[in-house]
Amino acid sequence: MSIETFPEVVENGTYRIGRSVISINHENEDNPFVPGPQFYISAGNSLERISWAVSQSLPVLLVGETGVGKTLSIRHLAHMTRNGFRRVNLNGMTTVDEFVGKLMINEKGTYWINGILIEAMEAGDWLLIDEINACLPEIAFCLHSLLDDDRMIVLSEYDGRIVRPHPDFRLFASMNPNENRRYGGTKPLNEALLDRFPLTLKMDYLPFDAEVEVTMHQSGNEDRALVERMVRVAQDVREAMENEKIFSTFSTRRLIDWARMAAQFDPMEAAASTIFSKVNPFDAKVIEDILDNHF
Image (tube, rainbow, N blue to C red; front, side):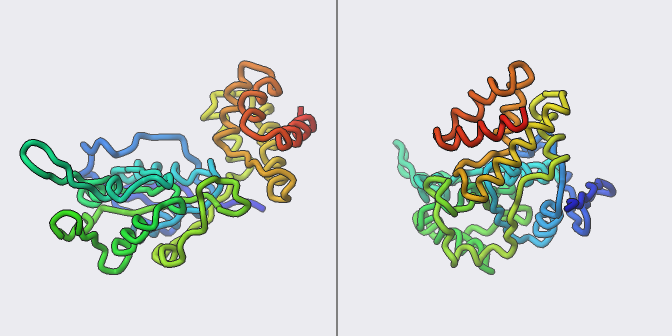
């Protein structure tokens, strides 16, 4: 099945992809949080739909395996439209104090320090909440009021001040699937929080040709024939995972690491340090058999 690719067009102060148009934030040129360029291939309609949500000021939830480009897609879009990009990882231990803010004390008395959420809201930056399905219940409840129609945060622990987001602020969240318990610490996302994301996108790995291009560019390995064989290995491993023959995934990130080392070492030798060392012995044996079919 072919994957449609939408060209990205920048003209007349706007960024356009498919049917979606976003104004470029030219007043944000000095913002240190505007990300720099990074190699990105827009395959499928994910970026078009994310762009539409941005144009409508809607929060977006991205769901997909590790290394499918969830973070990269938001970072790339922020770069193209000159918006600040911040990211926070909710590892299950992140507290409301770290996320929203907290009271501190010094010789002059108490004072308030904003957390990353309030900082991004007031600055008008984009915030990506990574691993949202590992967050503590207190953080989920805090997000409810921000994602509701009134879109605000009440600093009840400080002075009761109501914080409303800057017009340029956008909220994104990402999570790995919680099926089969491959990702420790994750759990099904609370339904009340899930329903507050009008747009939820399930992201998959890149199609073959696009993944070859990304792997070559990011790894620096210019041997196309070799990289094509590596991508076929990755696809076969993913198929084995889907069929529950193994429980380890094979991300594009892992593929890039393997290709980078294989530019200098034998592919099987490179796999020992970049693939087999990251999985359990049973999965390693299955993956080794898959490699033997291609090398």
